[in-house]
Length: 160
Image (cartoon, rainbow, N blue to C red; front, side):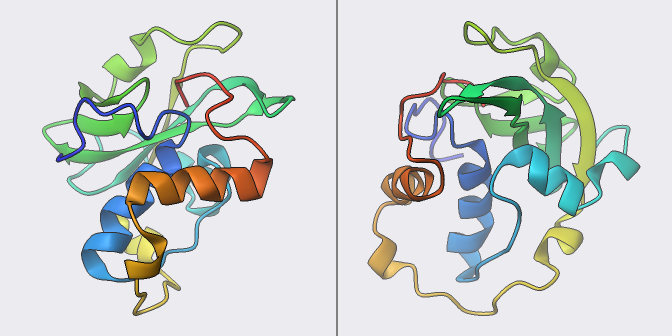
């Protein structure tokens, strides 16, 4: 919640939600390289309806990032009462169903709710201790990770 209003995580929603748990708990979790891949890995489509507190909340959204058009997905964290904190154009809080009505970047499809995964499932197989001091600022580290994975940092739309 300390990042509300920040544009630092635009196009890095998965890094935002992972950082929220990893840095607070000195751990490393192992999801996919992007939100849609993580949704599949965590079996999020099996859990529909209002997400519980702490759950990763997933959406399908297709667009072009790094020259590749695909369902990259979108993800946020449930902070209770159906509200999700997520990195869209900026870090914001929306009701999980209202995310489907957010304005998308040109060339991107509107997100559609795909389900949620409980934090216990996300934590399965995590590395118990991680020293985050070398990574520096969380948002800057997310930019570096995106560059390493996709060769793009800040070049995509400001939504997923």
